[in-house]
Image (cartoon, rainbow, N blue to C red; front, side, top):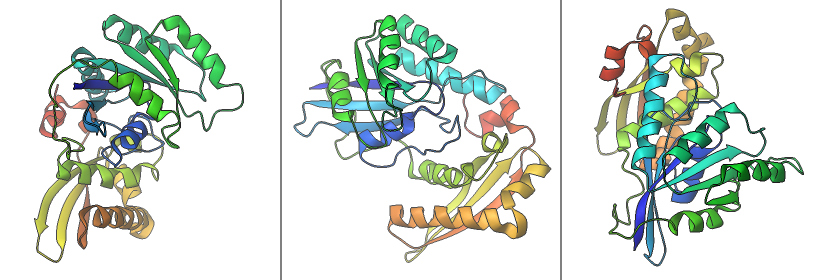
Length: 293
């Protein structure tokens, strides 16, 4: 069979995580309108129905100009994924002009010496006449294939999978066929909780929020989960809680509903907001929170 690692790279908010979820067939990566939502390399597994190939997708953080130590570490995660990938899927946004960030990533992936398939995403949202100019500009990069897609609507994704799988090396499956991701259940739970706050927060706060599970206990008829919501300043704590606790209550209820469906059980979710001063900028704190250097 053909099997290997496919690194999805691109600027923030081009739809990489939505694409991973679409191809895997279930939610393994959170999504939001906020850039830099993904903070780790998430592996999603896609199998051919006839067993002829297995794609292991590496959903990476969006490459960006870092403003803190966390951003620098996330960029290094992306570069590490490029180094280990068998194929690179470079995702650009059909609704946005090709810019300096895209050109920088194009150079990076070209320098990796790995087959590159370009996915022009969000064609369902593009205006008439927007997609073709994007493809024409991207032709200058001389990649192996160019595929217009909509990860949200599923358009063009079969053609993309065909291009990616055909370029994988021969070898044994890397994961069991019934395994959708190598991400732990606890990590996905923490990320789903964070996702429910991202769309409700503004300015720098989405980047300043981190969710850490402190306990998870299965009591038979109910699962009890306690989690800390970490922010960087006292002023942010009140915003996350909201007036009369409204934001904490609304986001918590939305997270609980999704987690109950995912876990197929009743859930008691207890959220506590704590201040971890300047955690994005402190190497020792990032190490403690699991963001490797």
